[in-house]
Image 1: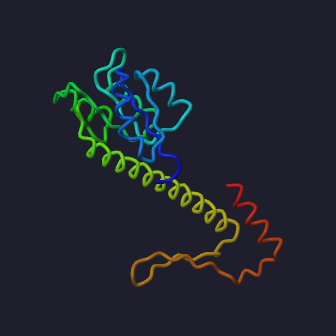
Image 2: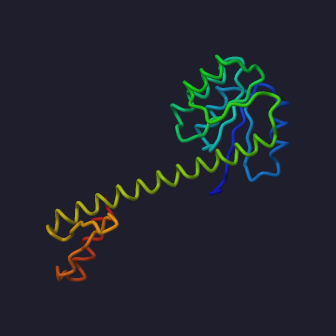
Image 3: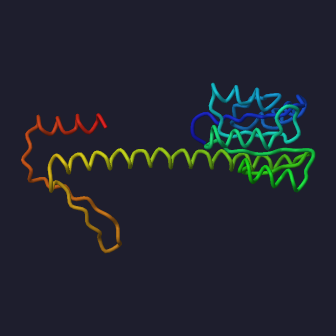
Length: 190
């Protein structure tokens, strides 16, 4: 697991939050509890959470509504619903509006919950790495476009026998060290 694995537990029953914290104390997570959806959203304004576990039946803001807001405001956060009032209707509403990752009923199976949390954190980490790599590829693409505009013909794109893409840079440009430094400086500004 990369960096700090933060999990927010949202339930209007403090004993449920305490029980989950006790069960997860040996796991490599930073856990924080919240008594309701509005409070949890305020916490999320100031701290990033990889996973949110929310009860469904809470006063003020039901879990499905809360998870839907989390999806809208923090789409990268993995959402799990935990409820003592399992109904097909609430499960479907949560799945459809909040795009929850997993749905658990109370009392929950400790081993299943732990495995699901590990999987949820791994999902978050993989998606975060994908976002980072995509950002890098986009930046590099902009740099290549800049180089090609500044030095037409500097690069050639080709495919090899395995259909892999290769970028060949024309090293016959005879650029001075100063010109190379200027190109690198311009690319770094993108």
